[in-house]
Image 1: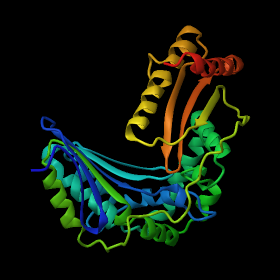
Image 2: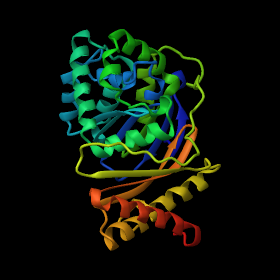
Image 3: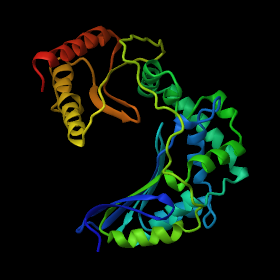
Image 4: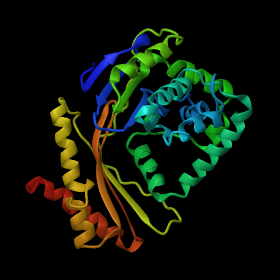
Length: 334
């Protein structure tokens, strides 16, 4: 029997983390690849995101509809996302259906077929997703913020642009997955009411056909760092709301405890309804509907971000309130 919380290694260099929750009647399983849009080819931003979509279009043993039905049949949930340095495939099912989750996720990650007849159709789906982002002030302002403070590969839009998406071929997608979707970059995480050794053994058997890859997915390029300078940037748009985002580059924590302290600080300063930013800027002054902060943590970068949306007439007062609350940290921290 495995420990309730643990870490181990599987064949092909795959890492596994587990948490056994004895009373739980559900299981959550995730396959996390240490890769993402930062590794898109030049001029073809959005390749990683397109690959994530295409993986769901069929595997060696499942059609796209078959994948969905296998999880829906047991009342589970199947999802995925791509970020700048992470690609994740996750599944939550009743604990007794754990083998279905293992089978579906291993099929997705080991045996995607990238069907040619689905390629252009899925590109059109993503094109609509890109256009929807341009209509979302929060998404658009966040992208603008990242591109301003870190103008290299890291900050390119995860889904790419209409132009870059059009440049991606099916061969590009297959080549990207062959290079980055390998076991040396994979960490599996499992949590729930199932004996972890059952999951480990079942996954290990299914990993056997995967080609061996040397190393552990070390990055070939140098991580980018946010610019440690003060900048103001304004993007005019036809929205009826103003989105304001600010951020600070911080020294990367040297210990887990130090990282946890920063997370607690962010919660006290802006992440909860009882936090200082929420209580002062929204509750006491009524300058916005939502205001928050968060720690951003990626390879080579660490910082604190805060954001809010307000009516145009409140923008100047909101900026002043942010400045006051930031200055207050020097003499009256949470």
